[in-house]
Amino acid sequence: MNTGGLWNTFVTIGYASAFLKVLTATVPSAVSEISKALTKGDLYAAYRDMGSIDFSKHVLSQDQRQLLVIQDEVSGWAVLGNPVRVIETLMRNRILPSWLRKMRDVLRLFEEITSVRPSIKWRTSNPSGVNDAK
Image 1 (tube, helix red, strand yellow):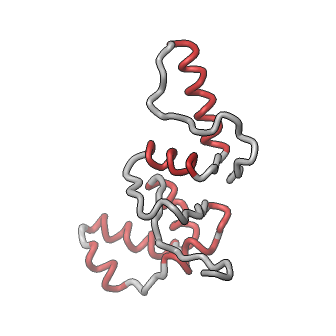
Image 2: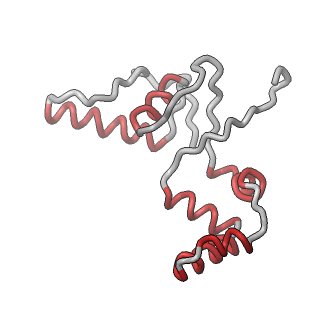
Image 3: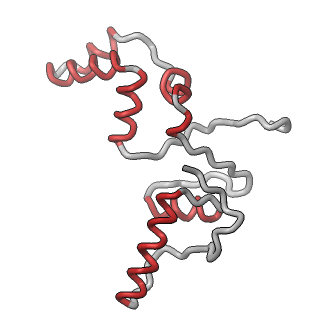
């Protein structure tokens, strides 16, 4: 770790459709087998007959452009059980992906139009120095 290694705590966050898309692209036979088993109502058979899949090796590492890695040395364990917590963690770590920047602009516009302050507090008023993870 002292030489720049990455310790993967294997916390993944995303839409089910995004996971299904990456699984279909990387391990299509597994997705097909599970789909057939669900249709037949026998999911156990798919897992029994399917070979082992290493999610990190066979799925995530195949296209790193789909991933965002956050270095987090100071917060300890964080439960990211809802979108607000995810956004607060990104902001605290000064990471501002393009989708979050767009969302922030929408919330500012909402506040201007309605005079209602959104529940998310933006800790970064100037995005200078913020990593733009795409």
